[in-house]
Image (cartoon, rainbow, N blue to C red):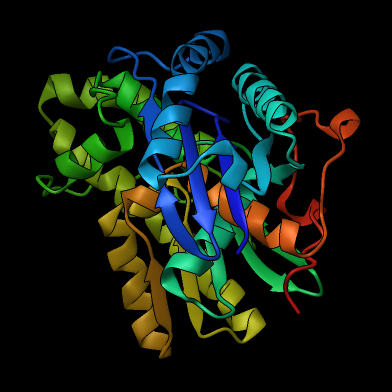
Amino acid sequence: MTVVIGFEGSANKIGIGIIRDGEVLSNPRRTYITPPGQGFMPSDTARHHRAVILTVLKEALDQAGLKPADIDCVAYTKGPGMGAPLVTVALVARTVAQLWGKPLLGVNHCVGHIEMGRLITKANNPTVLYVSGGNTQVIAYSERRYRIFGETIDIAVGNCLDRFARVIKISNDPSPGYNIEQMAKKGSQYVELPYTVKGMDVSFSGILSYIEEAAHKMLSSGQCTAEDLCFSLQETLFSMLVEITERAMAHCGSQEVLIVGGVGCNLRLQEMMDVMCKERGAKLFATDERFCIDNGAMIAQAGWEMFRSGHVTELKDSWITQRYRTDEVEVTWRD
């Protein structure tokens, strides 16, 4: 049996997970939460990760009931992500690998999300919608690569939601996206917003600029409520995502959709995608917040697949990179 420990810390979550042959043995996580109206700065986020990472590591080993000697490989997020938090986590992973005398593996964050989604949902060969605070991509597997069929040409969908939350001072606890989702359920009036799909790609910066400018005017004049704006923003953004996902499915002849990434927890997005899938006779696969939101087990799972197919990262190559595209990874573990 192969046991892999995975370290994830590319944004404001720090997670360490342990996987043994497809079984999640442990997956503790901490989140750096800032006051309403604020985002998280790389240096502050890295400081948070440094403060808790050894506690989380101890939790991961204790929950799994394992000792360092039981681990076969140490996997860590190589990128993409925020520089300072990535460095913090890579440094600990490197140190642990040397202390324990274990091989090291640098993992692509996006590939981690996909492999975790495939493991948990048992989806066979899905068209993947990867939506998070830092990424928005429509992906399908072809010839040993996860090919990007469509993506955002500016900001990620999660970033758009987070920045709107800051404008109207929505709490960041547990996450701005979750709080927008709850407020949107109470919204009843649809406010028309720019809808920007360009072929297979989407653009969210214009919608954000529009709603940032309009929000205070509309709220102060009583034209609509904050709940109406949350509802309208979600409906518009998610409609765009469903459209480009359906187009990719048609191109690939796919009958499965897998939603991964932090925004993938959103039940309204899942509901809208499910309507489209049913109309096409296709099946939707999604996971809950344990595996959608950044976590260590997804890095462990991608590391497990890579390690089993002969990958190892030499110490001199164990750097991090803030830009690391999904299609740069050769997927040697799939036929």
